[in-house]
Length: 312
Image (cartoon, rainbow, N blue to C red):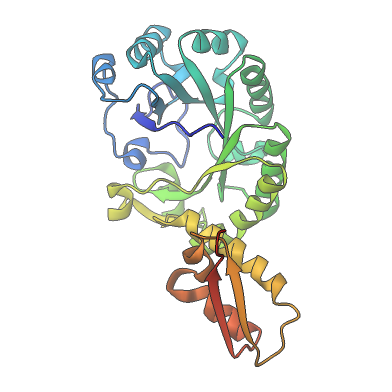
């Protein structure tokens, strides 16, 4: 198995973004206030096998001169960039890969036109399909990003989006439940009662279903939920599905659903022991032993014990 590269994030908040999405404040989300200069990128300490990743803006929508300056500053390391689907074509992919870009992440967010329009994205699902093909045909790795709980979104629409993204056969996906961030248009909509927040519990339940879709398609999920930041944890996330350990909550729910299947023939009053792979104990037990308590009560068990498997 090829070892994963260490990723060094370089935040370029809002740089190149031609639209103001209702949910977005990259300065608050990333904790970075201004984009770095090319010289600052060049000065970043890194190992030879590390990958520099430009996040937080629409990389391919910034002026080509600045793009090239950033890419030259990141060399000779492998590079990944994040951008909008409507700012990628075959010519762009060829230019990026010739300068060391190995991975291109596309912010698809939804494959439903009405959700994209209500979110102020400025592109359609057809742009995602076209850009994904350009990335793959150009020889770069493709990562697709989706969001749940956007304005106009529903459980069914998020599942549809996940299915459509899986059909594009990306090398990985990121799933970001919507967080209401201070100083965004979405925050104002929420305060006026025109947007109902996507709660942590709702997002966990939905994302557990999405995990099943991507697992069945053998597509790795490389991120569930926003990366924790000092700003978000200190109050910039005013509502919505923000939790510092969101991914663990989702996989704990996935395990809970699987355990229910294993326990369907359990008899009331029985003492049960379930085995989990090594390192998965916290996911199985759940936060504050929530899974243990739920299953014990639901199946009227005398006790439920979880043990790690012994590797031989």
